[in-house]
Image (cartoon, rainbow, N blue to C red; front, top):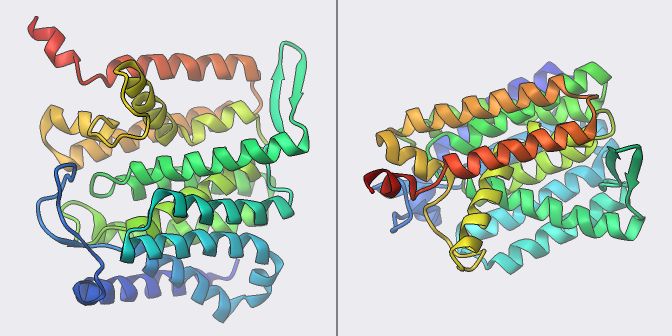
Length: 333
């Protein structure tokens, strides 16, 4: 991997974020607080425009051959990024976002990026037929991309959690000498480190959908890639926190007979923030949870799929009851 690419990504991300902070109001790239916001003042957004473009510009300058080698992968990522930029500027509908993710997923299918292998359970190896695998993969990619987007609710949270997951993918890429796992993870790790210097509480800029949708899609893509080497069930731990958060919120809404897609303030970060009213504390607690999950996933690379799934389901049950907004009410009674 060309060291000049990493240096270029860092420098370009830094400069572009500074420019975005300065000119965001003129570009309409600002986030105004509402009833669900965790911030109290108008803040620039769209840092994903800076750090993703820094990655592409650096590759064009220093390694166009690499970009050509993985052209369909980077075209797919770029499509989701463009959809995110459009949303940052014009606030497009969720349906339109899914259109971008769908087209990007179809591009990945051309390269056989799909979830075919679900693991081995009680001696039965579960392999999905191609047409089912493509449908399942699209919903998995779209669901995870949206899950990470929903985690972008506290200063530094989505970027830090993504950093942990990408670092795990990088370690597995090095272990199995996979060029795409190593490079794609490293590029976004460098960009996120610079971004987090601006996004840590109190945030000077938010990543916006241009950042969170792109990160979610990249992590979903790398999850499919890494499943070629490790147990499909173990991968769930490496990407656990956004999954658990989404599953818990959806379960709570169903229990209360609400729409599964109704926005609320019952995500993990909302409930944890209520405990101490401290943004850095809440962010670090959730990041440390993801660190633990990623270590478990890394250590269980080749463990029994059934036991791994049962452990993940137990984890879901624990978190479902731990992150319950009704606990405080029950205690008073």
